[in-house]
Length: 166
Image 1: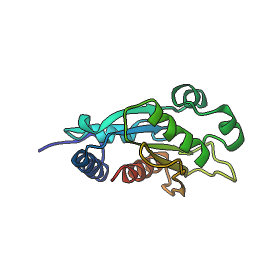
Image 2: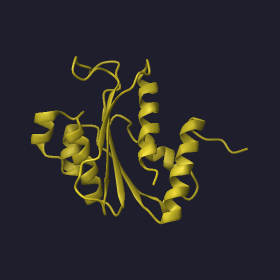
Image 3: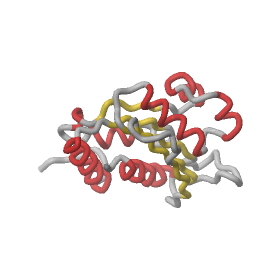
């Protein structure tokens, strides 16, 4: 029996992402903040992931977002790291600094601290950028209710994996 490091629901969805992207020859990149590399870890649980996953950026600090993904300080100062503007810039930066065809970015407030009235714990933003696509921002803000930091990160990982499906 094969055993996995991550929960079965994450592994099953990661398998679909790898299989479906491999079929069409599509490479993916990730720009992760609150998930801390969990999406990349999920993909690498799957044999054959090297044909699909180009690279992942774990840019937890604002400085890392700016240095590794070319997110402008103005975006972070104006909208914050947990904003559609920021994750869109992160996804664009992941494409720019990779050989991927599609990039997904994630940033959020996993808790238990760090929430504000405008961005409470569980606020997570996602963006997807494609190399062949136009410059239309493709982003979403979700309010995840997991009751714990790990549950919010699990739900965010699943949501990001869904965005990587063709």
